[in-house]
Image (cartoon, rainbow, N blue to C red; front, side, top):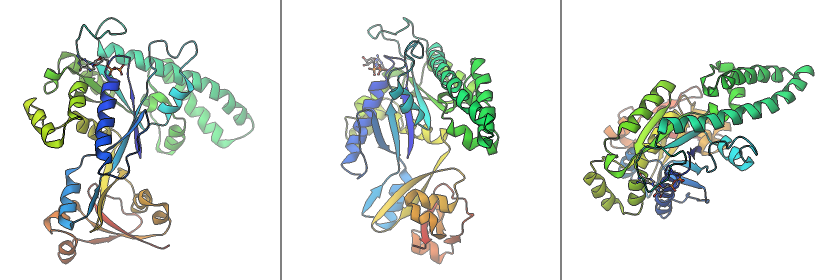
Length: 364
Ligand code: GDP
């Protein structure tokens, strides 16, 4: 599955947000078979109303949403990369994520100390990014020595790696994140393999006070401006509200949200924003036993999509029987779609579309 790491300075609301996520996950665990929760890892269902509609039409006994993993990555403070450097556990945790949710304090509260004595989310974002830039530079300088040895030994891959490392270092030395380096398609894989902290896409999470959750405030507006200039995304949420919601049952939660002028829970928006940031899509498998959602990256071929369910499905892929979501609904299910000629047989080169309802045929 896809993983988002939650980072931010101390006292910005990370734990509050993470607790809300894991409480929600724990509540879901009763209904869904997959939620395993470690102390700093929470798996949450990706909310998708389409799945419920599909299940209702097909009379599926069980509904299994797709999921997203959040990892609480504590330990970032100003100067963290100096001295002892960032801890190995911290670096390992953050390297393994696909994207970063960066929580920024956008609430004023004299009772909650700010580590730098003032509330300034844009400066906080820079503080954290600087630490990550330094960590990337240090790791690259170390790795570059190894690569140079291999380059001298005539290793072709090492030549490519050296070129990419130098491009990254040049950007980092200018005080900018590695994600700003333009990477060609043929270098994309080697680039990803470098697992640079600052090459991961960032979603800024503006944590505002309860009464500003629906509107945002001047601070979150500054973050929005910064995010747009960087090509990053942002969401406005109130971690406190999310924590309260996570303790309510669904009907109470809905009432509470409408009292606050909110259409949906911030966590749902956060999960969706993460989905968009990573260019993810959902396809469905629907039958009387279960209706299930699966996550793929945009542009995934049918065999690769089958591989998300099981490696054997990908290896033995023959074809995918495909019904677009809208057709499935309009035809009131698979049988109707078949009769209306809306079920297509798609081969290996088919690029799966968001919302596709699929059956895979494969050799074993
Ligand atoms: P972390 O250090 O980033 O994990 O921050 P915490 O989640 O522990 O929050 C630090 C403090 O700020 C706690 O006392 C929270 O209750 C408080 N806090 C978090 N979010 C909000 C908020 O939106 N408004 C206010 N007033 N306090 C908050």
